Image (cartoon, rainbow, N blue to C red; front, side, top):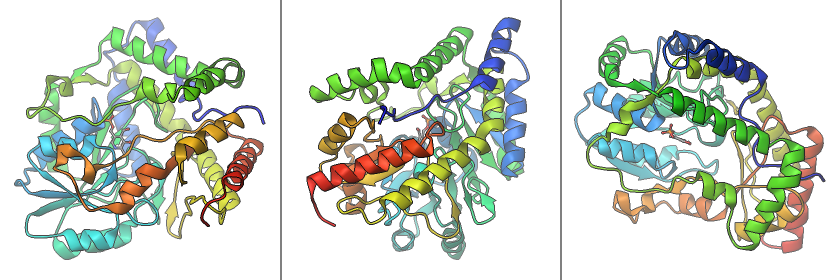
Length: 416
Ligand SMILES: Cc1ncc(COP(=O)(O)O)c(C=O)c1O
């Protein structure tokens, strides 16, 4: 099989045309791009307000402060991106971690058990483009009178029942980084139906400074370089040999270039939180990305379902199995295997590029006062490998990936 990269270009000609048009007109920062993008995204999600921010972590910090909730605990799944509980901590709250279920999503029984008089909110994370059971979670939250804050950073366009994720809670947080299924070359958002909260966010948001022209051009250059690197001939001739060389020395060069390792947040909001907001070019880019979202998500979904069917029951490999009620979008396709580093090396030798992923078992991070007791999350982080499932994958390549995974699993033996 021809080598398959772990990612595909995050954008295509429609987005590039918007970017080049903005550059040609000299309107990189000022212009209606962001407000129009926010309006279009609100209409897409069927919500009243989308408020754009420089990042998802800043969005969460700002939203928490704007809710006016008294200090207390916020329930998170332990398996999540550390920056979100870190932002909660920075806003004066205490992250309370519970374990994940067999789908690697918030375990609702554990949520119920963790609720106490200090609980202020619950944050379900729709991780890897899968959906938390929002019907069941809404019932738990209603029973205890608690608000839900959804993390939709990896699931924009996924649906639980008839509703898009992001439309169920008091608010939801999203991101538009260059590796996401929807990108504006950066930035994040708060989604809400609450008019009062939206008004408070508008006031607080007046201090946000949009990314300058140079930063926007740099982000466009970085995204273009990633798009080029994922182009199959270039991947085969340049990146794949480099990846293999790196792996032989125990280094994953893509992870090394993009890693954001958990670190302690400062005790005060860093001024950087308020810089890097969306300007005109970024807004236009986001709008074009939104128009392509359903088509690209459908390709991810079809690819994920094909891999799930092909890998079901493979000894030594635990693959995602979607359940009734969810319409996932497979931002990635995480499998759990023993010794994932060696498994990844064997797959790369067969032409399948994979990633270990960047989630943490947050309950075990010292910045949150570890150790916690969330063994499923710790096990997932220790054994996870992400298979390529991006929109550029053809059926033939997906089948090639599944065949390679089954062959490596058979070579290695291992538990059923
Ligand atoms: C699940 C999840 N939540 C939150 C974030 C944070 O996004 P940002 O980098 O915009 O702060 C990410 C980032 O990739 C993520 O994957």
